[in-house]
Every structure is written in C-alpha cells, then in structure tokens.
Image (cartoon, rainbow, N blue to C red; front, top):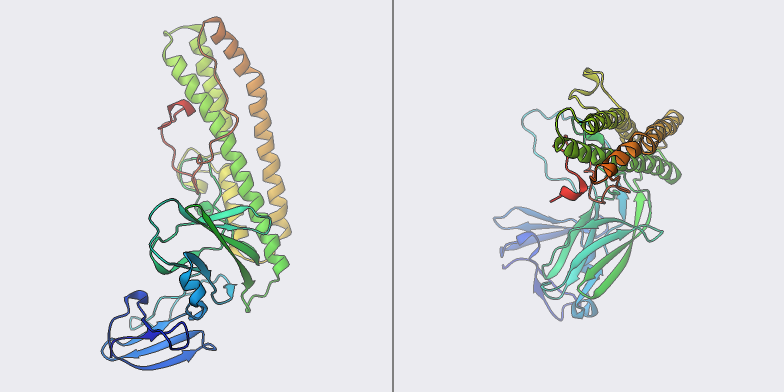
Length: 374
C-alpha cells in the first residue's frame, strides 16, 4: 500500500525505494524482464513505472552500505550503432525516452558530500585521463553518464563555428578505469565497453576510426596554437603602432608587419561567414569537413580520408614554416627597431593556454594579447 520496498539482506531489513521520486502508492504487481535486469511496477493510480537496471540494487550488501563510498556494478555496456531515421506514426505517436547513449556509472555515498573536491574521471588503458564527468554529491545511489567520447578538439576562432568539431571522437571498445576522488580518498572501478551486437564492423575497425579522428583532433590543436601565436603578434603590433605618431617610419613598419601576420592567419581560418558560399574555405574549414566525414561512420575510415589527413597536415606544416620564416625575418627586424626606440619587443608565446580554443571554434572577437586576458 505504501510503495515499493527493497531488502539488501534477503528480507531481514527493508527500505522504501525512492528512485525517480517514486511515490508512496499501492503497488499491484511486479514483473521482471531482460533476465531479471529490469523491473516493471504496476501501481494503483500512478500507471506503470520501470526500473531499467536492477544491477546496482542487487550489488548492495552490508559491506557496501557501511562504506563511505563505493562503485556499484551495472549492466554490460555496448556502444549502440549511430543511426538516423524519421517516423511514420503521423501526429498520433507516443514515445518514452530512450536510454542514454553513454555508459552509466553508478556509485553509492553513505552521506552527502560536503567538503573537499568530488570528481569522476575516466582513464584509458594507458592510464591517461580522457574525460571528466560532473559528480553528484547526494547521499545514497547516484547515477552519472559518460558519453564514451574523448574531449572535443580545440579549434581556432573564425567567422563561424566549425560544427562537426563540437563533439569528441567516440572511444573504441575496451576496458576503461573510472576514478572518483572524494576529498582525500580515491575509489576506482573498471568498465568494459563492447560493440553493438548489430554492428557490421570489427573492434579493429573502430580502433582505426578512433585513431584517424584523434589525428585530426591533434591537428586542430596544432592549428589553434599557431593562430594564437599569430593573433598575439598582431595584437601587440597594433597596440604599439597606435602609440606612435602618424608618419613615423617604425609605425609604418609595424602596420605592415601586422598585415603580413594577418595574411598568414587567413590561410588557416575563414574571415567571412558563409563557408563554401563565399568561396573562402580555409584549412580550418577543410579540416572540419574531414573530421565530420570520419565521425559520420564508426567503421574503418576510407583510404581517401587517411590520405586527406596527410595532405592537410602537410599544408598546415607549410603555413607553420611561413610563420617561422616571418618570425626570424620581418618580426626580428621590427624587434630590432623597437629595441633601438626603447620600446618593448613583440613576444611570441610558446603555445596557447590549455583553455584557449573552444570546441567548434568561436566566432571571432576583438583580439587580446596574453597579457590582457581576464
């Protein structure tokens, strides 16, 4: 009469089930599905409720309940195949929410987390952190979802967002470590990601696709560092030129220097909205199209896609060489003139800060030097 009650010890102790704010309503019938992994609950007056995964509840025991925190087991994790489709039901359709596309991670906390950091990280087989998941501080059973994707690429700003690069590559099947840091304590568990049983490609194909996408992601990061350096030079050059009088020879030299740096930048990013419509697609836009093509299918990338990665890498290397020549040539001469005029030299940062370069790239904004950051 008062809801669903569960027992962690075979009936010695009972507790009300409160998941998803389950009400204190009369339960008329229970049915198990999927080899006892799911529970369907028929209530009086509140319809049908479904607990998708009973595995964490079955993992509760006295030892776990006495622990300050612990991971709970879940159902086997499969990466469902990517699919797109329409609908044929007209305007009389009804649908419930699909299960999350990511991997569900379930953990128990004896009490609400109050002090110190609480974070959940996912590590690959080499022990590298590939993602960080926001953690819930509530007491009891907590459920978070990992997208099973690596972090999106860092993309330099341009006229418009690079839409394909707003998400990271799907990780390949394998064993991953989930690490929860709760104050001074660290808890770890292993999760195994498997292929969708309907997949027509192999684990090796998924690994090849992931490696190709990561190569493009790394090129995006390399590109972001280069654009950051160019923008830093332009910002410092323009700021110094603005302080000099009209007609000053050094001012003219700095204006020309800024224009040369901007010409190098425009080989990497488009400066007009519209992409292919304007005819101003650059390395960044070509890279985004390639990244999207590789990400479109979870199977093995084509030979043309692999060759295209090599081509864009070579083209980016050519632009990097141009900037290196610019740095040792025109920029060095300008710095010599600035030194003679007792003005600060134009500095080239070693690389962009880790947070520089948002996923997808942001529309361009007024430039700031590294020393003018908020």
